[in-house]
Length: 304
Image 1 (tube, rainbow, N blue to C red):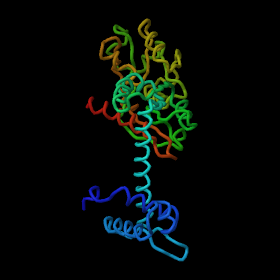
Image 2 (image 1 turned 180 degrees about the vertical axis):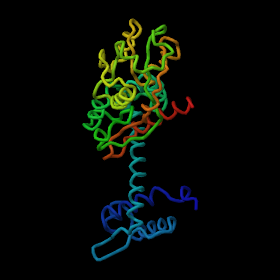
Image 3 (image 1 turned 90 degrees about the vertical axis):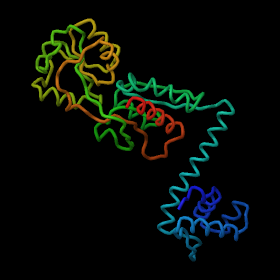
Image 4 (image 1 turned 30 degrees about the vertical axis):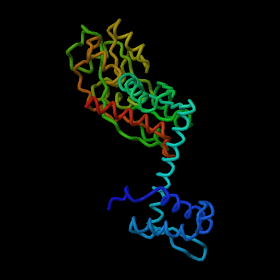
């Protein structure tokens, strides 16, 4: 059955209004139609979906189990259409809104610039605010409603309460250094302890993974560790010294491709983890957030 060619907006509005008001009479009044018209529209919808959605009882109207399921999606559809209408109205008035994006360093460096450009095509005129930071800081701002979306690594379970995560890809950490570094070509992780090490901060998403990697390599506590999540600081220090930078691959991908930095031959596959989009789980994502998520998906499609 080709439902999309038969179900009309009036069917969904009628069904949702009857369910909301609990009465055919009240729904007819709210929609400015007759009660027989309301009954016919509901009957048409039930015939199309091949299920009884509402039943009359002494208290008025009750949803069937099938009706409760369908109501959820029907209301989502109506809400989405209304958001689209509101969005077009705001565009015509010159108020295209704003979307607030939190990005962990690896995403901010490699994926986000292209995603922002793709989003500008999908939602012209919308202001984009980008805030970079460590995982815990950004997800706390997301939970507080100060950000609309966070793109980055999946964090520990205790930090993800109340959030929904959609995976985009997997990423591992690398040990980056300047070209000509004494450890160039070496796979000996323990030898890293002889040099300054730029280490992920305690509240970063990759810190637990890096800790396990170092323990497995016999370097549980690097004696010359410098904790930082700053991309500009890490890049500057490794280019001007023998420091080794333990960082997500995405942060230094362009540096490695251009030959400005090298990656040591240490096996870091055990640090591989999911990178994705985080939103609040207790509400339907606004249109702008869904559009930005689509822009990220478009960028990833061009890179595969």
